[in-house]
Amino acid sequence: MATHLIPDPYPIPSERTEATTSAGNSTFVAIAQRIESVEEARAVVADRRRERPDATHHCYAFAVGHGASVTHGSSDDGEPSGTAGRPILAVVAGSGLGDVIVVVTRYFGGTKLGTGGLVRAYTDAAKAVLEACPRRLKIARLRLVGHATYPLYDLVHRIAVAAGADVLGADFNADVRVTVEVDADKVLALQAAVAEATAGVVSFAAIDDL
Image (cartoon, one colour):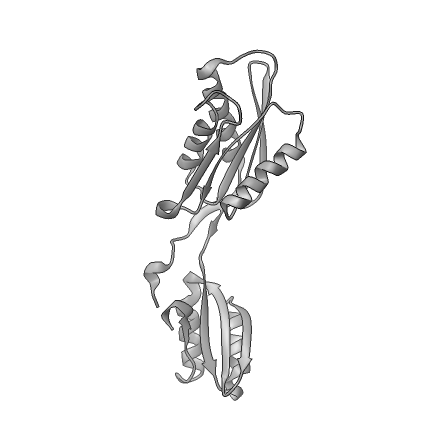
């Protein structure tokens, strides 16, 4: 199995979180939530605009993926360049979270904060929501394929389910081609259990290794 292709587990938001801060007379309402793609990040921002159409700005930053394979994005949404999106992104990048977006919605209160004040305000808003945001580990899931004889299929199916795998399909031809999806850290245990129970007749391999 090509284990070098398996990303290490990394922390992601476990639920959408909201936090409110203030600076001057402006109110900043920040949300943080999990995303899986740049398109989903854009959809979250669009939803936020619909949820709070009376707000002055909806500034954001996101990280899709983690570590060496991360994609970042940010926007000042009309605030002076570099005063909103970049500070939010700095907090996101420093949080250790992957697959996350932070949107900070500002309600202008009539007092201008200046460049430095805006940077501090958006930084504080992003920090507040990410400090409150609960986390969980994202563990990569792999698809495996095994070939079982008809008499062994039910046994293999039970072992796969007991190991925490999702059985995605079974193709009944000369034998049964079983496709499962399982957490990367459970692959070796599943392979060992199937091999032992079937005396080596059935084995599972990652699709990339076939």
